[in-house]
Image (cartoon, rainbow, N blue to C red; front, top):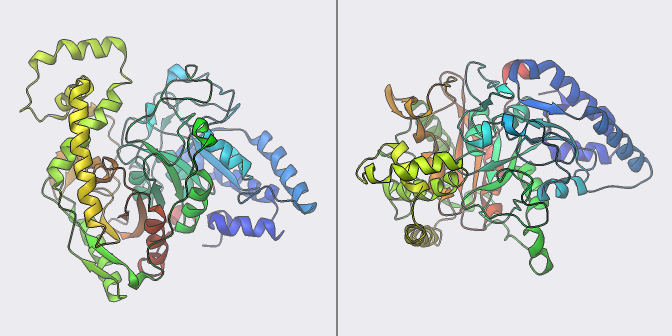
Length: 489
């Protein structure tokens, strides 16, 4: 791996500080990668290159004067296209927002800019982030760099493809049903779903722009923002910058995450949950994960086939009801009215996802409060588990990257061990941790026989994000870490 654009961000920022490369030269190398590879991948869908070049020149002048803007001084990055960057497009993949140019930065974007980052592009996603594949009518299809006939995942698919191919140093995504973790897994990079509520959400679409123009915004259940990168150290670098309360709460609140629980990999005690009949894992993925577990055990890690005292089925039911309460809130009024009219025809025994979605979207507040109570009981059981174990290893997704499929959403399926399983199973393993607000880090650990990357999901206790990222960092020497896609190295 010789191309400098594929080096970790922590190394790139060091090289800039030590004047071994200028911010301007580094930006030009990322632009060259973008011009070379993006036509094949369609990961980056908008750029602001002239403004980025001007800022890179300013960064280099500051460096020459002995000044440093912060931990990301002069680092070129891109941002997912549902996160607002002042003056750049922010469409969330929707034709209805094709002319939207934010007048201010999202709260987390401002944090990155204050740290010295140079934003030169926006990355693709499904419309309003509502799919496990990254395509939309406005910007088209994003391809997976390991196999362009397959999806890079969604909704942060453009971000993951750009990171994996060295078109950006790091990225920021969002995750409500695996939208950071699926793309990280499918593209062979690192990703971190933060503990719920510790990264500000102001300026992230939805809600649609123009409603919340001040410092306040709506609080969206389950969904979080977090980084995608080529190393676990980069995840930590980004989390150190973006963690914090929402803007109005900064008057009195601050967030100080605890350090990792242990220092050495062999000191950790880790639980294991590699498969479940409710959401079966394809053997190509499971075998790869098992090899990683065997390697960790050989290295002295205490790994036991133990999980929290929760069932996949019950957790998934609660997750789906709470998830679709959030997703349904964004439905068009005429669609919501149609759902209301269909309520009398919906049976609780009908397990089709479409009907589950409708029931959850139109549920009464009392029903939401009751299922939220069930969620809190799940959280307690996870907390009990983490009294004995430091983390849990489980699949990121039940399959590796799958072929593009843009047919009717509710008719799609995925192939798992030769059987056609529901398309929504893609978010099953992600939902386990989303619903209970836990942090989870994806670390690449190997490849399927088809040479598709596989990542493991490292789940840590509530607010102990540093523990899962630390384990991911320590695993790299044992399980391989990031490998660039062959055609993009």
